[in-house]
Length: 218
Image (cartoon, rainbow, N blue to C red):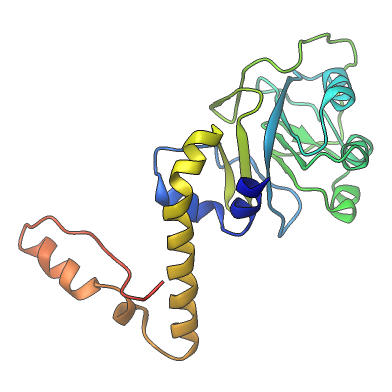
């Protein structure tokens, strides 16, 4: 729980900057509900133009889980307001789907963090008995049950708890530095003065190795 609380105190972009090798879902998988974030263990399900597996997953997922749905490039909505409401009732943290959802107005009113490729009013069948909790590929990323899912308006990151824990101190330092920069900008200090921009550009022009860095106390 402490790890999840620390994640929710920063942005996904800060964690991604701290370890650029962490997997991020295809940017087509985006927030359907604005200004939300989630962090929790994945409960995986495969639902290819059939939403029965999602309903079955809702019965088995535990409070705090993130329902992660692979659709195999399906073209039908595999969940909507009713399923999202049940997810909230059961204490799930949110839903991440590399396919389509529906009932967007209801989803926005509910406020549960939902990430998907888009919406469609067309639903699929209800006959699939696809297994639950097996590794899937969602948004181009392999996701195993229990992997940590961290998402906000910028996108969805998935990794093991161990990899996230290793990157988190650097991510927190990045977040502190960015907050300090924003405070300085609010006081009318130019962004360029808050980084080593001039020295960095000059070093690159000389053919030297260099890195752009913050010049603030974090």
